[in-house]
Length: 93
Length: 269
Image 1 (cartoon, chains in turn cyan, green):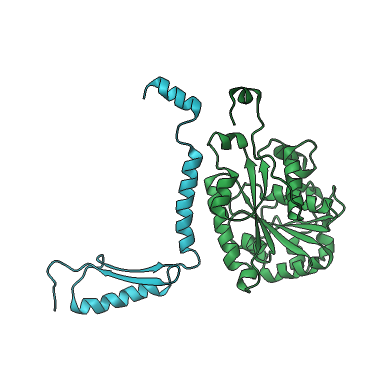
Image 2 (cartoon, chains in turn cyan, blue; image 1 turned 180 degrees about the vertical axis):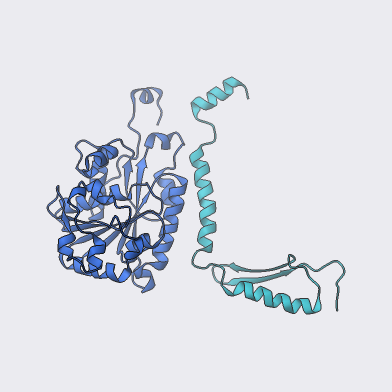
């Protein structure tokens, strides 16, 4: 963009408006914060994760990092998601 | 039935005390018996904004502790006959303000006042919580700026979940958006969130827009609520706010840039 184009853009006000950026950022962060509000992660999730992990570990050797328990909120229902990445060669006991 | 109105925002410095002072004055000017309470224990400032700082003898903590009667602690406003101020304590700890004590005071005030305006401290800790807990209605003061809008959203969440009305399952606290320090010129140039943007994000009814103005500082300098200033946009905007609050259908003013000579010449909008 030549300097003249830049000047014309500046005079016309074509550069990205910061108010637009502000609005987009607010909409994203507030959607996130509202989702967590009131319906925050239930207290039992960490304990549940520990117990489930202990059970799985009896049969399969899994990394702590490859084990995830998540609760997703939807309008009509919640989804409890258990995600375990199994090692390449299962170390069955 | 007396109404309890909290003036709140989460963020500091957005105009809660300025609004509390002008809003309560406006209610009183319309003949309503009004009391305005400073909940900012340890950092009281409503007395300065109302210009009654030298007449403070007792405060809300003295009343809660039963050391003086409510009547002894109330200060009559110098501008309005129907307005009284209940100052916060400047020396005590903020934890001295307990819910039971505040409820007792509010119940007693409800017997003789039409409106009880609670000027909340900033933040979301005990002082702010106590100020909003008993509210029937809330004025959420917001600047057109990201951190203020986010904090207002947080406060709205707390009002909806933790106020007495929410806890007891009564009709929810009636929320009003008040946008302050608004600069239409910067909005038009795309450098400031518009009142429409803020409303879209916070999703509560707009009660009014107070323009950014030098006269707010002049008002606080002299200890006169801004609503009393002559020929001031801010004063008129606050009078509109009070009118709308009382149920009048008034158009929004001060949301458009005053068209200058060059702007008209260039055909800008």
